[in-house]
Image (cartoon, rainbow, N blue to C red; front, top):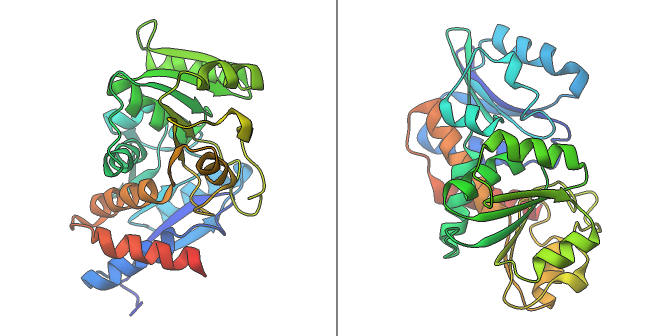
Length: 282
């Protein structure tokens, strides 16, 4: 029961109405009898600094960060854990005595989702679409595990900056513009395609970042979008004979890691996954 001693946890981003994070975290908190409440707050770019200052002033225990703030929040934090600094993006913040420390659980969450589906990145050729906060974490995870990575983004400078930030050796990462020609060229030989953009997310579920005729059997397709679970990209990939992985396993895995950072308790992973599934079905 919420009372004067209840600690605040939350999510900031824009949009947040589609998020199932409140359902997952509150189910886990209730199951473990922990006196926290998790809420989602829509925060536009112009209000980010004020929102972070407000959460600090309210002594919130911590919060998650989603699009479009995962990189832009960095200057507003007091410190970063090393992996978040290496990635250049934060999705989890802990407040300790008024000092805000940023973490990134997206990278580990993505790798956990691949592992669940028997995918090992080492020595694989992987096409990554996007260069935002989620893409940065995924790129870091893939290159750190020995993948050859092609980053395709609508804004070429963003893709190039991502590659430069990771500081990888030549040949491990290429940064190019997202267009049909580059998609066709690199998907012909790719082992895995990863969509790390919000294209195809509710309410724009009729959109896809990749033309369906470029998908093929033998390709694996991961979509970080989890709402809907069966995005247009995944449906068209299945129709083309490709294996698919939805964004929900990554969401659950990264959420569980955030939960453990805030509470110091082992996250009830299966319960959180079930709560997420039920929230998506509503």
